[in-house]
Length: 193
Image (cartoon, rainbow, N blue to C red; front, side, top):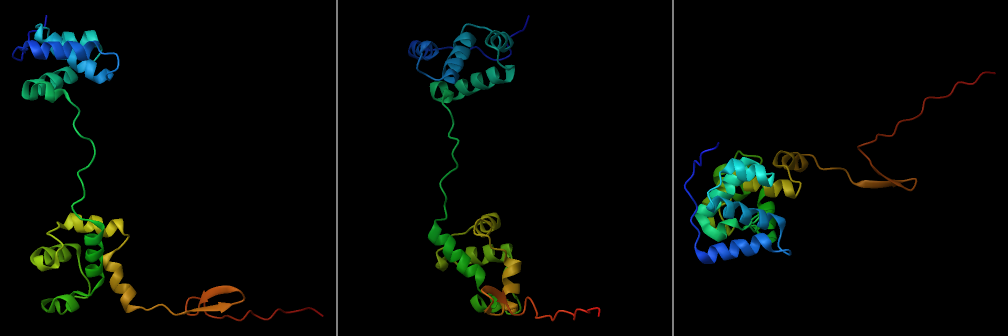
């Protein structure tokens, strides 16, 4: 026989009525009914193992709902929000951060004279050290997420600046880059006579 390891749950009359209503409600979710039933049985003195066996639940589930009820009473039985918190960096702030990332560090900050491109750490540190930019103080992971969301890689921005692409030219109805495909002549075809 299992011995109850946790303290007993003492219900107030209003709480007992509400839990009985939730357990018997036909329109409520099944989870709310299970949670109410767990607490009602625990208040009767049943062990977690017995409650879990009778309801077909894991002992850990029974233990978790007992714990949450003990901490928050009826409010502790509510679902926690599953949606992520709202973004702290709006589209306008992200756009300004991208514009800053595409600029050379030496052009923005004279103390970075020899630096050819930003790193995520340097960009986050620069934005955090300059509140006048109005970009807040994002962490390096936040800066990385913003850059990744907009498909920007700081190491490739430098290469694009250093190597301009040749202009497009038309040839036979198709567009070609003149430097990408040099014009090769076909070798002469030898014919037998």
